[in-house]
Image: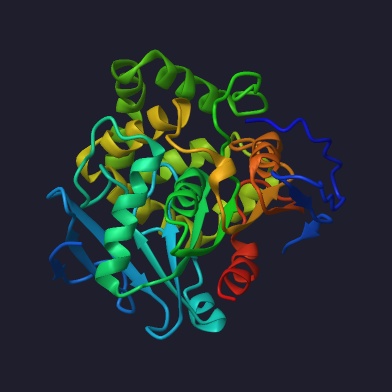
Length: 330
Protein backbone atom coordinates (compact mmCIF):
# COMPACT_ATOMS: atom_id res chain seq x y z
CA UNK A 1 0.00 0.00 0.00
CA UNK A 2 1.69 3.18 -1.22
CA UNK A 3 0.94 6.26 0.85
CA UNK A 4 1.84 8.79 -1.80
CA UNK A 5 3.83 10.75 0.76
CA UNK A 6 6.26 13.36 -0.50
CA UNK A 7 9.82 12.53 0.43
CA UNK A 8 12.68 14.98 0.46
CA UNK A 9 16.17 13.57 0.75
CA UNK A 10 17.97 14.82 3.81
CA UNK A 11 14.89 15.89 5.75
CA UNK A 12 12.93 14.45 8.64
CA UNK A 13 9.21 14.34 7.96
CA UNK A 14 6.37 13.58 10.35
CA UNK A 15 3.01 12.68 8.84
CA UNK A 16 -0.07 13.07 11.00
CA UNK A 17 -1.56 9.69 10.22
CA UNK A 18 -0.14 6.19 9.87
CA UNK A 19 1.76 5.03 8.05
CA UNK A 20 4.45 7.56 8.80
CA UNK A 21 8.15 7.67 8.10
CA UNK A 22 10.90 9.88 9.45
CA UNK A 23 13.53 10.80 6.90
CA UNK A 24 16.64 11.67 8.84
CA UNK A 25 19.45 13.84 7.62
CA UNK A 26 21.95 11.97 5.46
CA UNK A 27 24.81 10.45 7.40
CA UNK A 28 28.31 9.60 6.33
CA UNK A 29 30.22 6.41 7.09
CA UNK A 30 33.74 5.52 6.77
CA UNK A 31 9.43 -25.40 19.18
CA UNK A 32 11.49 -28.49 18.53
CA UNK A 33 14.43 -30.51 19.65
CA UNK A 34 17.73 -28.66 19.70
CA UNK A 35 20.93 -30.33 18.60
CA UNK A 36 24.37 -28.82 19.13
CA UNK A 37 26.88 -29.22 16.34
CA UNK A 38 30.55 -28.38 16.03
CA UNK A 39 30.92 -24.98 14.43
CA UNK A 40 33.06 -24.73 11.33
CA UNK A 41 32.34 -21.02 11.05
CA UNK A 42 34.65 -19.57 13.69
CA UNK A 43 36.18 -20.54 16.98
CA UNK A 44 34.14 -17.86 18.77
CA UNK A 45 30.82 -18.87 17.22
CA UNK A 46 28.29 -21.12 18.93
CA UNK A 47 26.29 -23.07 16.37
CA UNK A 48 23.59 -25.68 16.15
CA UNK A 49 20.47 -26.97 14.45
CA UNK A 50 16.90 -27.25 15.64
CA UNK A 51 13.99 -29.35 14.47
CA UNK A 52 11.05 -27.15 13.53
CA UNK A 53 7.43 -28.08 14.35
CA UNK A 54 6.88 -29.29 10.76
CA UNK A 55 9.93 -31.55 10.97
CA UNK A 56 12.31 -29.40 8.94
CA UNK A 57 15.81 -28.66 10.18
CA UNK A 58 17.02 -25.09 10.72
CA UNK A 59 20.69 -24.25 11.28
CA UNK A 60 21.96 -21.23 13.16
CA UNK A 61 25.14 -19.50 14.36
CA UNK A 62 25.27 -17.53 17.62
CA UNK A 63 27.79 -14.69 17.98
CA UNK A 64 28.56 -12.15 20.66
CA UNK A 65 28.23 -12.23 24.45
CA UNK A 66 25.74 -14.81 25.73
CA UNK A 67 24.28 -12.18 28.04
CA UNK A 68 24.08 -9.58 25.26
CA UNK A 69 20.90 -8.06 23.87
CA UNK A 70 19.33 -10.75 21.64
CA UNK A 71 19.09 -10.00 17.94
CA UNK A 72 18.14 -12.32 15.08
CA UNK A 73 20.09 -11.55 11.91
CA UNK A 74 18.58 -12.24 8.47
CA UNK A 75 21.22 -12.76 5.79
CA UNK A 76 21.11 -11.47 2.24
CA UNK A 77 20.48 -13.25 -1.05
CA UNK A 78 22.34 -15.48 -1.45
CA UNK A 79 23.65 -15.98 2.06
CA UNK A 80 23.90 -18.24 5.05
CA UNK A 81 24.55 -18.36 8.77
CA UNK A 82 28.24 -17.86 7.92
CA UNK A 83 27.49 -14.26 6.96
CA UNK A 84 28.56 -11.82 9.65
CA UNK A 85 30.32 -8.51 10.22
CA UNK A 86 33.92 -8.77 8.97
CA UNK A 87 35.16 -7.50 12.36
CA UNK A 88 33.72 -9.84 15.01
CA UNK A 89 34.67 -7.41 17.78
CA UNK A 90 31.61 -5.32 16.91
CA UNK A 91 29.33 -7.79 18.70
CA UNK A 92 31.24 -7.53 21.97
CA UNK A 93 31.69 -3.78 21.63
CA UNK A 94 27.95 -3.21 21.19
CA UNK A 95 26.83 -5.87 23.68
CA UNK A 96 24.75 -7.72 21.09
CA UNK A 97 24.12 -11.45 20.90
CA UNK A 98 23.48 -11.85 17.18
CA UNK A 99 21.98 -15.12 16.00
CA UNK A 100 22.13 -15.71 12.27
CA UNK A 101 20.50 -18.68 10.58
CA UNK A 102 20.22 -20.40 7.21
CA UNK A 103 16.93 -19.44 5.59
CA UNK A 104 14.99 -22.44 4.25
CA UNK A 105 16.88 -24.04 1.37
CA UNK A 106 20.23 -22.48 2.27
CA UNK A 107 23.14 -24.19 4.00
CA UNK A 108 21.96 -26.83 6.45
CA UNK A 109 18.33 -25.66 6.64
CA UNK A 110 15.79 -27.82 4.85
CA UNK A 111 13.97 -26.33 1.91
CA UNK A 112 10.38 -25.08 2.11
CA UNK A 113 9.39 -25.06 -1.53
CA UNK A 114 6.88 -22.38 -2.49
CA UNK A 115 7.56 -20.30 0.61
CA UNK A 116 6.60 -16.66 0.74
CA UNK A 117 8.46 -14.02 2.74
CA UNK A 118 6.01 -14.36 5.64
CA UNK A 119 6.88 -18.04 6.13
CA UNK A 120 10.08 -17.08 7.94
CA UNK A 121 8.22 -15.79 11.00
CA UNK A 122 7.20 -19.20 12.32
CA UNK A 123 10.75 -20.49 11.85
CA UNK A 124 12.19 -17.59 13.84
CA UNK A 125 9.57 -17.96 16.55
CA UNK A 126 10.64 -21.58 17.02
CA UNK A 127 14.33 -20.65 16.99
CA UNK A 128 13.77 -17.92 19.58
CA UNK A 129 11.87 -20.37 21.77
CA UNK A 130 14.76 -22.84 21.69
CA UNK A 131 17.30 -20.16 22.52
CA UNK A 132 15.19 -18.75 25.34
CA UNK A 133 14.53 -15.38 23.70
CA UNK A 134 11.21 -13.98 24.87
CA UNK A 135 11.69 -10.63 23.12
CA UNK A 136 14.38 -9.76 20.61
CA UNK A 137 15.38 -7.33 17.88
CA UNK A 138 15.70 -8.29 14.23
CA UNK A 139 18.10 -7.07 11.57
CA UNK A 140 18.00 -7.83 7.87
CA UNK A 141 20.48 -6.81 5.20
CA UNK A 142 19.58 -6.74 1.50
CA UNK A 143 17.46 -9.85 0.87
CA UNK A 144 17.20 -10.29 4.62
CA UNK A 145 15.32 -7.00 4.95
CA UNK A 146 11.89 -8.29 3.90
CA UNK A 147 12.30 -11.28 6.21
CA UNK A 148 13.15 -9.09 9.19
CA UNK A 149 10.06 -7.01 8.43
CA UNK A 150 7.94 -10.16 8.24
CA UNK A 151 9.01 -11.07 11.76
CA UNK A 152 8.25 -7.55 12.97
CA UNK A 153 4.75 -7.75 11.45
CA UNK A 154 3.85 -11.30 12.42
CA UNK A 155 5.53 -11.59 15.84
CA UNK A 156 4.26 -8.32 17.36
CA UNK A 157 4.62 -9.40 20.96
CA UNK A 158 8.20 -10.50 20.53
CA UNK A 159 10.07 -8.22 18.12
CA UNK A 160 11.25 -5.09 19.90
CA UNK A 161 12.91 -3.18 17.07
CA UNK A 162 13.77 -3.88 13.45
CA UNK A 163 16.83 -2.78 11.49
CA UNK A 164 16.74 -3.11 7.72
CA UNK A 165 19.62 -2.17 5.45
CA UNK A 166 19.51 -1.77 1.67
CA UNK A 167 16.24 -3.69 1.48
CA UNK A 168 14.14 -4.42 -1.58
CA UNK A 169 10.54 -3.20 -1.53
CA UNK A 170 7.45 -5.23 -2.43
CA UNK A 171 6.85 -5.69 -6.15
CA UNK A 172 3.55 -3.81 -6.02
CA UNK A 173 1.49 -2.30 -8.82
CA UNK A 174 2.62 1.23 -9.53
CA UNK A 175 6.20 0.67 -8.36
CA UNK A 176 9.03 0.15 -10.84
CA UNK A 177 10.77 -2.69 -9.03
CA UNK A 178 13.68 -2.97 -11.48
CA UNK A 179 14.49 0.72 -11.99
CA UNK A 180 18.06 1.67 -11.13
CA UNK A 181 19.32 -1.89 -10.68
CA UNK A 182 22.37 -3.46 -12.30
CA UNK A 183 21.73 -5.38 -15.49
CA UNK A 184 22.46 -8.69 -13.76
CA UNK A 185 19.87 -7.90 -11.10
CA UNK A 186 17.33 -7.00 -13.78
CA UNK A 187 18.03 -10.25 -15.62
CA UNK A 188 17.79 -12.28 -12.41
CA UNK A 189 14.46 -10.83 -11.31
CA UNK A 190 13.02 -11.09 -14.82
CA UNK A 191 13.90 -14.78 -14.68
CA UNK A 192 12.13 -15.06 -11.33
CA UNK A 193 9.07 -13.34 -12.79
CA UNK A 194 9.08 -15.96 -15.56
CA UNK A 195 8.79 -18.76 -13.01
CA UNK A 196 10.74 -21.47 -11.14
CA UNK A 197 12.21 -23.18 -14.21
CA UNK A 198 13.51 -19.91 -15.63
CA UNK A 199 15.17 -18.74 -12.41
CA UNK A 200 16.70 -22.17 -11.81
CA UNK A 201 18.23 -22.10 -15.29
CA UNK A 202 19.45 -18.53 -14.82
CA UNK A 203 21.19 -19.31 -11.52
CA UNK A 204 22.81 -22.59 -12.65
CA UNK A 205 26.05 -21.04 -13.99
CA UNK A 206 26.39 -18.87 -10.88
CA UNK A 207 26.12 -21.95 -8.69
CA UNK A 208 28.85 -23.65 -10.70
CA UNK A 209 31.13 -20.60 -10.46
CA UNK A 210 30.60 -20.37 -6.70
CA UNK A 211 31.58 -24.01 -6.33
CA UNK A 212 34.72 -23.78 -8.44
CA UNK A 213 35.87 -20.14 -8.55
CA UNK A 214 33.98 -18.15 -5.90
CA UNK A 215 36.30 -15.15 -5.99
CA UNK A 216 35.64 -14.80 -9.71
CA UNK A 217 31.97 -14.25 -8.92
CA UNK A 218 32.91 -11.63 -6.35
CA UNK A 219 34.93 -9.80 -8.97
CA UNK A 220 32.11 -10.09 -11.51
CA UNK A 221 29.65 -8.55 -9.06
CA UNK A 222 32.05 -5.82 -7.97
CA UNK A 223 32.55 -4.72 -11.58
CA UNK A 224 28.90 -3.61 -11.71
CA UNK A 225 28.99 -1.71 -8.42
CA UNK A 226 30.06 1.85 -7.54
CA UNK A 227 33.62 2.54 -6.31
CA UNK A 228 32.74 2.52 -2.57
CA UNK A 229 31.35 -1.02 -2.88
CA UNK A 230 34.36 -2.11 -4.93
CA UNK A 231 36.68 -0.81 -2.22
CA UNK A 232 34.74 -2.64 0.49
CA UNK A 233 34.70 -5.89 -1.47
CA UNK A 234 38.47 -5.64 -2.01
CA UNK A 235 39.12 -5.86 1.72
CA UNK A 236 40.54 -9.35 2.49
CA UNK A 237 38.33 -9.89 5.54
CA UNK A 238 35.20 -9.00 3.56
CA UNK A 239 36.14 -11.27 0.66
CA UNK A 240 36.86 -14.15 3.02
CA UNK A 241 33.53 -13.74 4.79
CA UNK A 242 31.48 -13.40 1.60
CA UNK A 243 33.11 -16.44 -0.01
CA UNK A 244 32.45 -18.53 3.11
CA UNK A 245 28.84 -17.37 3.33
CA UNK A 246 28.05 -17.87 -0.34
CA UNK A 247 29.70 -21.28 -0.59
CA UNK A 248 27.72 -22.47 2.41
CA UNK A 249 24.58 -20.91 0.91
CA UNK A 250 24.71 -23.23 -2.12
CA UNK A 251 25.21 -26.45 -0.18
CA UNK A 252 21.81 -27.50 -1.62
CA UNK A 253 22.36 -25.88 -4.99
CA UNK A 254 20.14 -22.98 -6.02
CA UNK A 255 17.19 -23.90 -3.78
CA UNK A 256 17.35 -21.09 -1.23
CA UNK A 257 18.47 -18.46 -3.73
CA UNK A 258 15.72 -19.15 -6.26
CA UNK A 259 13.07 -19.40 -3.53
CA UNK A 260 14.13 -15.98 -2.25
CA UNK A 261 13.88 -14.42 -5.71
CA UNK A 262 10.48 -15.96 -6.31
CA UNK A 263 9.25 -14.74 -2.92
CA UNK A 264 10.49 -11.18 -3.48
CA UNK A 265 8.65 -10.83 -6.79
CA UNK A 266 5.36 -12.29 -5.49
CA UNK A 267 3.06 -11.10 -2.68
CA UNK A 268 5.03 -11.20 0.55
CA UNK A 269 2.20 -12.64 2.67
CA UNK A 270 1.92 -9.71 5.07
CA UNK A 271 1.25 -5.98 4.98
CA UNK A 272 3.97 -3.51 5.89
CA UNK A 273 1.27 -1.46 7.61
CA UNK A 274 1.02 -4.28 10.18
CA UNK A 275 4.59 -3.79 11.43
CA UNK A 276 4.11 -2.56 14.98
CA UNK A 277 7.74 -2.36 16.02
CA UNK A 278 9.86 0.70 15.43
CA UNK A 279 11.96 0.31 12.29
CA UNK A 280 15.15 2.01 11.19
CA UNK A 281 16.19 1.79 7.55
CA UNK A 282 19.76 2.38 6.41
CA UNK A 283 20.11 3.04 2.68
CA UNK A 284 23.22 3.63 0.61
CA UNK A 285 22.97 6.70 -1.61
CA UNK A 286 24.69 4.94 -4.52
CA UNK A 287 23.13 1.48 -4.16
CA UNK A 288 22.39 -0.24 -7.48
CA UNK A 289 21.32 -3.61 -6.07
CA UNK A 290 18.52 -2.26 -3.85
CA UNK A 291 18.25 1.35 -5.06
CA UNK A 292 17.12 4.27 -2.92
CA UNK A 293 13.57 4.12 -4.23
CA UNK A 294 13.15 0.72 -2.56
CA UNK A 295 14.17 1.86 0.90
CA UNK A 296 12.06 4.99 0.65
CA UNK A 297 9.06 2.98 -0.58
CA UNK A 298 9.32 0.67 2.42
CA UNK A 299 9.69 3.59 4.83
CA UNK A 300 6.57 5.28 3.47
CA UNK A 301 4.45 2.19 4.11
CA UNK A 302 5.58 1.50 7.68
CA UNK A 303 3.67 2.91 10.67
CA UNK A 304 6.86 3.95 12.48
CA UNK A 305 10.12 4.17 10.56
CA UNK A 306 13.23 6.31 10.30
CA UNK A 307 15.06 6.43 6.98
CA UNK A 308 18.82 7.00 7.13
CA UNK A 309 20.50 7.85 3.84
CA UNK A 310 24.22 7.06 3.92
CA UNK A 311 25.91 9.51 1.59
CA UNK A 312 28.61 8.36 -0.78
CA UNK A 313 28.03 4.67 -0.07
CA UNK A 314 26.38 1.84 -1.97
CA UNK A 315 25.15 -1.60 -0.94
CA UNK A 316 27.94 -2.54 1.47
CA UNK A 317 27.23 -0.68 4.72
CA UNK A 318 29.35 -2.59 7.24
CA UNK A 319 30.49 0.70 8.77
CA UNK A 320 26.90 1.37 9.84
CA UNK A 321 26.43 -1.93 11.68
CA UNK A 322 27.75 -0.66 15.01
CA UNK A 323 25.20 2.15 15.05
CA UNK A 324 22.49 -0.28 14.00
CA UNK A 325 23.37 -2.70 16.79
CA UNK A 326 23.45 0.10 19.34
CA UNK A 327 20.01 1.29 18.28
CA UNK A 328 18.49 -2.19 18.13
CA UNK A 329 19.84 -3.19 21.53
CA UNK A 330 17.99 -0.45 23.42
